[in-house]
Image 1 (cartoon, rainbow, N blue to C red):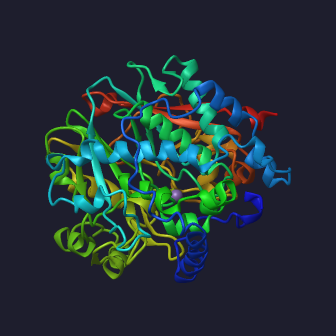
Image 2: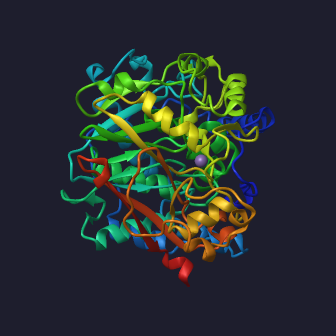
Length: 508
Ligand SMILES: [Mn+2]
């Protein structure tokens, strides 16, 4: 059966409800039974010391990906690629890169207990590649934060959701090569570091190829490529939204699900990037007031890691009686919903905000609200004060840059993302009938569209999702965006620059 036949109709991301999880688990059980023979016996055989020579060179890889039909063409009913056309035909070829990626993660700086701030995770379990969320005993959920510092004058490139869109990823990387920043999979010494903000798979048909490309990038540039964990880097989501079905259709019985999903737990759910005494929160979703990053931010050295541990959302409210005081309805909602808990998964007993939460579009919308179909939504009045509270004198978190908030049908945020060249700063306008209905064309004259933008304190930026997807098709855009963040000593001198790239397969 071809992958397309297995994959459910794309719908907008929803928070996993008990029904959804049940169906996901049923599906997962089927997949696990099918792979039980291979099971976990092959785990722990990680190939050590492999770096860049794990597979085809860049040119060969690119040309084999270029032959694939676009997701948009498949969505419009075009016949899928024959299995012979798939760039990776055997799980073993994917697995050798996955093994090297996992080995790199557990042998890298996370292995060293002195790089962890605060209470350590159970490193024995955390670094044990024979365990995963589906082994017995299961790998415990131990999400973690990472701090990274760069020197003034540095820049990083940020990429939003890819969702199985290999054509956009290849187009962006090709652009970086044309800029002289990359050669093959390798970043040149003068190039910005690459930071990917999660949601690599699901919804598009090429999650396998996207993940493979990202792992190759990491292996070629271990200290300069960073993968953040999105809400789709989670077993229950990939069971429901297509990636496991895609991988099973491509690799059949050889697929080792346990090993495949093992990598998610080795990705930070938030990356605090610092420069001098200022920094930025980079994550997939949004705010998580239950986590206090100050010990991590105040630590010396880079990179440093901290376990998220217990979330103390109610504790945060109690300690900050003034937060949202001017907005009693939002404050009341937070008091009703916030609790102190130990996360058991990204969605239980409540969502992990770094992976799941959202932001409002307009100024003067509520500071805090709960979207029962998804997660918590933060407004302008909540975020600035929250950033102040979780900063330290030596590391002020000035802004948030993230992905995640996308719809396959045109809505106010999607129109703003398209109008602002794929990089939208929230809260530029106040709500009105006119603003809700504004077209992309009208918005181009209203919202920031420049190629170099200041980063004010308290600003929140959403990066657009890649276009070869239900999103590009439904919202009628065909360009991919990554953003270059230039960091200097003074926040006033920071700049965010959207880089838009044509995706050739969509221009045909
Ligand atoms: Mn997401």
